[in-house]
Image (cartoon, rainbow, N blue to C red; front, top):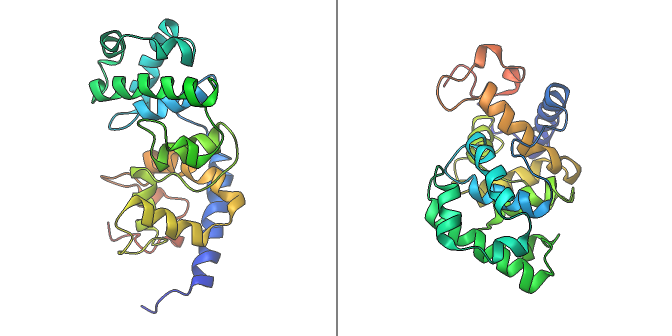
Length: 219
């Protein structure tokens, strides 16, 4: 099979995105939140667990600590008790309190609308920062690469075998998608990954981008 040129890959990526948009629109965030601070905390909590599980916990968390200043003054054991159903709850509780304290001390109680500043917050890596920039501020600085996005990017061969880290997968996607589409990719692909391109038993026969996928029939 001849090597796909970058121009051909971008053309195929554009067709895939058009179908994603037709099916999902901009895509909806799976996490419930009221403001950028709540979203940032929810994304931190979502590591190694489902968004549905996070959505069961965060109403209790925000009832107890409505604002960053409230959470900054929380006792560690009290936050641990609230988020106990989630994986790695001890480290997450520690990060949430430290995150809230930094938001208050360094950013006037407001989550910064800057991807580099966001990554200074405890528990916030590039994926979380990308999610917040896209969802809360609608100012995409990249594409958030979670397990769904990473899996789909490789199955669609928009990222090659050498893209063996989330950062490398993101870099590959940024080369084929224009910036105005970065805003939608993560949400659309998360839904697509849950509905069609699942880790186990993907629904290739029902997939609406199937003929654009080099992996179709080989999974």
